[in-house]
Image (tube, rainbow, N blue to C red; front, side, top):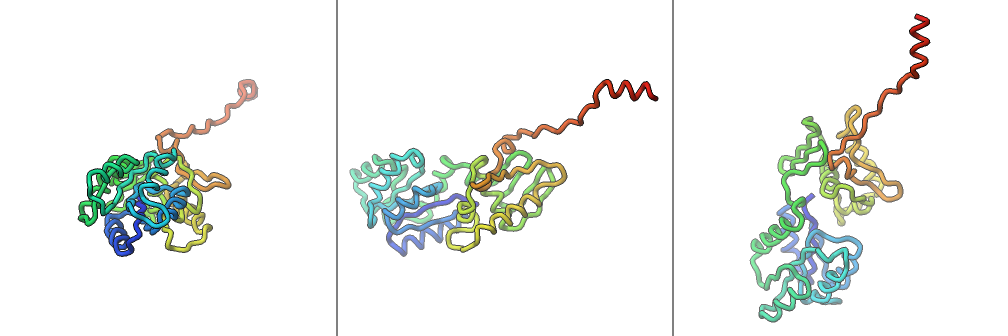
Length: 255
């Protein structure tokens, strides 16, 4: 999975344009047309980067940016502000409320995409890395190949995206709903039980013999990639039980 980007923009044509170009770069894009709706959505789940228009119905982009910076969960969220206001005083105002970058309309779409890429490289390097590693598992985003201890693992497209999603945030517990949004997308209706089926298939593919299962089931909450596995901490092997010394001596005497 690429990074998740939220675009808060009330101009429908511009929203469509940004979605098309960002998805072409491999990002997952949510377009929201109202500031008040965006405020509610961002309380539920944060994207990896926010593109925020200055003038919005319901709640202005400036006020939304200010609110996001006041919340602990979103105080470090990368924010690019879009606006038709090009005056220096307005740019200073946008940056003073917490925007990380400022783009004046009309703008060059390739330039905006380049700014998004540069900001993600600084803030979320794991989202744009070509290779992801966790423990003895290596995932190559470009070739769509997965290896474990050097052995290539054959995964279907959904299992690949699921593993990639887990590997981007080791230790974090994802609910089935969050996995559906992150792996399948908000626009596709899939029953939550489907998540269990694909997690089962992923486990079957990546685990062989006595290999440790890197996926942790959290009862009542969801699934996570075990952070101890990701850190490369091997599980302790079970030791064979020792026979009592007295038993051995009796056996030798009887022999």
